[in-house]
Image (cartoon, rainbow, N blue to C red; front, side, top):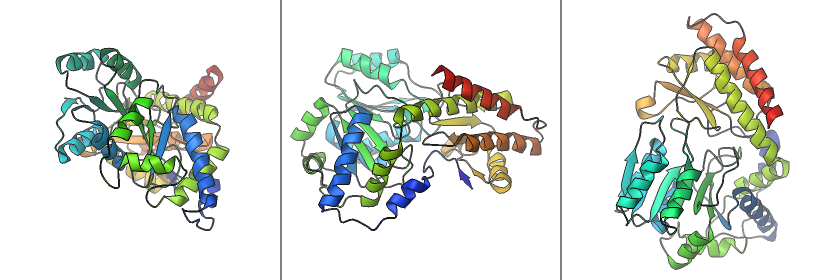
Length: 368
């Protein structure tokens, strides 16, 4: 079965083998060496001054960020994960302002600027880079740059869980950048990543907030290559192996080419790309027969892709592009989708999707 869901993504055999080694105790020099290696690699990848690795999902990092940095956040809600920021703020009785959009639509820079100018007490912005509920790419970098020009003290919290490791992120105006193990890093779920700017570090040092999600306590320990609480040892060892084998620049090029080629191929057989600004992490297709398409792909072609959530549960399907993916696997998926449309009497199979996919893929690689 080919796993092409946008998280969890499949782990490569070399990573699985690294994680299958005998367990290391987290209070040993051997494990601290892995930890230090991953910390330095993450700082380089995120281009942030400090990083944390937490034994939780990305939602834990989102909650830790809200509790530590926010008194009145502006939450951008273009899907389930933007909504999650709002729900976390509600659960802690934190006042907030919410911008709600359709799941295929990103807010404009001007819209956000007007809200900031009319609400001087906003101290933070919570936003997804890729809102994976619909595969939408928010214009985070432009919003962050504008925000800092309005008020440099507003903290930008960016959920990059389905963007880190997919494309180079301009983090120069981002204060908190959130990642997760189960996406482009091709690891099991269970570890969240946080990158911090100098401004965010200063706030952490002043805000001694919470117990398990106390970022001040965690940062103090992780600077010594250990953790306040039990570390996700196996996942960190897997992350170290990822960094050993990963050529990040090549991954960025291939992910971009794979995403653009898949979207072009699916459009060529009459399918509709759902978001107005598609992310590179996944291709999201709007189709009212999405449930049947996914069922046939799984039963007949051994391809497992994701459906939607809530109001889009039965109307979209999402195809992963995160991680190190062999070109023949993506080609298989595109072919399988075209064959599925033939079975559903949408159009006769003629192989055009795969031809368009390969032409676009290699053209994009050449132009990178």
